[in-house]
Image (cartoon, rainbow, N blue to C red):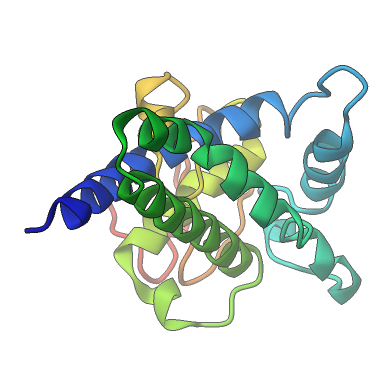
Length: 203
């Protein structure tokens, strides 16, 4: 194994875990509250997106004119990837191995791409292959609960930061009329009698 491949692989793995923390911080502290006079992310996400997409039947797109509110603006990707890479670029410079920055770039870009695609499929289901997977099924329930409890489940792709930082919620605390569908799990309290979607497993 070459030293370049070692550092690139190591930084890719670390970068994925770091991206979970970065997503959590961004989502909790910038997308759900204004930061001084900067309220663009807050308005676009907490005000607009959450107003349109709730945890009931409106979790799935109802009006085509609202489709543009599902993904982030096109320029968000390059900006967030660049910001997320900063500590890895510094590490590359200090350690003299630019493979660290390369692996981090791949990790950050992959994570952001996964975020946008998974989030799109969650709110605009089309029976895609990914929607039939068990991982998507669980992540969909995780995100559905975020639309019910905005102070919980900030991760979309990898809920590691939610687990570590105490914001992980596996089920609703109270019964509510949630969205249904073949890729939407039952997130009601365990004692709630709710019809389970097609792929859900009764406990």
